[in-house]
Amino acid sequence: MTTLVTGGTGLVGSRLLQHLLKAGVECRALVRPGKAIPDGVEAVEGDLFNAVALRKAVEGVSAIVHLAAVFRTLDEKEIWRANLDGTRALIAAVKLHAPQARFVMASTCLVYDEGGSRPGLEDDELHPSQAYPASKVAAEKELCESGLNWSVLRLPFVYGDGDEHLAAVPAIVSRMKWHPAQTFSLAHQRDVARAFELALTGAMDRRIVNIADDAPSTLYDMAKAIGVTIESCAEPLKNPWWGRADTTLSRSLGFIPTVATLGQAVREGIL
Image (cartoon, one colour):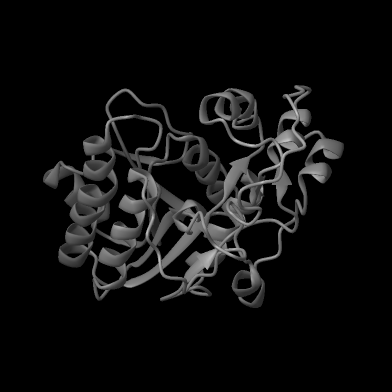
């Protein structure tokens, strides 16, 4: 049984492919020409807007893990094109050529309201103003209404296994003018891979699920974990809840993080 992974050359996808291969999963990846993928993964060259490549990518698969997305750009049209139109194209191809496949899509915990009064819950009303989370909400809706066997994993700040996400924190704090005590839900790369593996068993079918570890971390501590001290501040936070996601549902479905906190990752040297 073959699993197709889109976005398999990204920071999350490349590590997920390695994890699935070690677990004995037959993997196929839709990749742009010239992109490297791990040995043992079947490559299909193309992208989400190449109908021929999409058909070849989805035919015969038992599952799809859809990670391909655009995030780090100021081009909002490209964000919407990749994240919504690309997802629509993939859904259409799966409905035509692999309608029985399990379709697992990555989304983001950034969809939750910046003015929320508690950590975000999966059934909250969503009205994100930024293009990236708004496009992911729209893509979620397309998948949920597709008639396919779907699940959506809303990911937090993902880090670990040398992905350099934490290294970007000081510059992001400076650029966005974020409070150093702002707290975000996190998940280590290893546990993100485990969450997708669990979803592929059917444990999360037809559910939207928040994925995160056991202890949200401040931006200050995230920078400190890589040996960088960012300027601190004693002013109160505008909203201490934004950036945090409730994980009650994921725990009830069997997802238990093996890297429970950022502190554990620091102690074990797995940043």
